[in-house]
Image 1 (tube, rainbow, N blue to C red):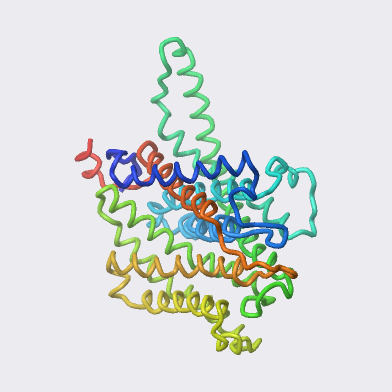
Image 2: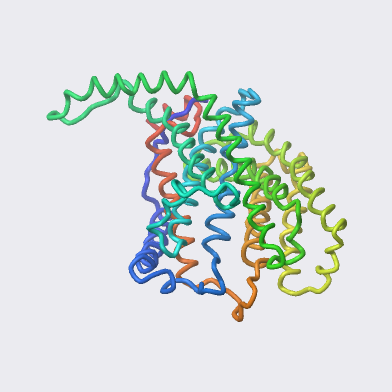
Length: 400
């Protein structure tokens, strides 16, 4: 198995559909920047954040966790057999965090002040820690991706005729950067894992300091730990989900030997997360809020049911040996973490003196779905141009 660009047609009916969704989102995005955030969203002074923070940022950060979990497994733990999944996971994380950073930019009322945390430091702020860690980690992800760029262009630099004098210098620069990165990449990999654990948990800290504005079902002192554990729990399912989708889309044979091994790891990780989650419920005796069966209770039940079903599925050898079984089980984990972040940032969070119950507008939903569609399109373009996805040699030869 060697990484190579995917030789496949870019435009398909599914791609056309994604382009239309992306264009619809871009229209509402343009309105947001021209007419202000109030022209597109249902946010107001009493409701400071909504779908764009709960899903695009909080859930986006969690669902991009496959980058640091696979990097930790493949490089820090030196499990060489998992190296083929590291590049796609890294690309997913890079695009995911880019999407998260863009979502923050879009959600800020005065978006042109997004640079302030770079020079206006507040070491006592959980949000400042999240922002700085994410900015540094995005930079680290792009550095980790750069070897794929050098691998693509070294020995193949070919500028147009009037610029052909640049071919040799650029090739020399690429070779130098590639050699320097090869010698120092372990620093960036370790930094990426450390930064991820910091900001994943600090998102939980951000909600802890919300105090009584948070519903008791989610307001707990161990929320930073739960955020970190849930991010780790969804890391490998995201890798499996992305790998199976890419294999199906590009007519590749799924790497079941590796994916099955990953699947067998997920059950114990989910077990640790659920143990802390359920233990916290009984220690704080918050189960009394579940039997009220209001909106918050039902959303909590849905969140827990998804994670518990996924836990049971991943304990089955039959499931972990089946592409469909792995896909379904991974989907349950992804949905569970997505609902968890929505619950924490939207359902559970209720600002004081808020007379209106928030529900996202059509414009908010359009921008979120449109950005996801755009992310998928960019991912497709990159894997078709750069050596990201590992393929068997006979598959590469056949498609050439």
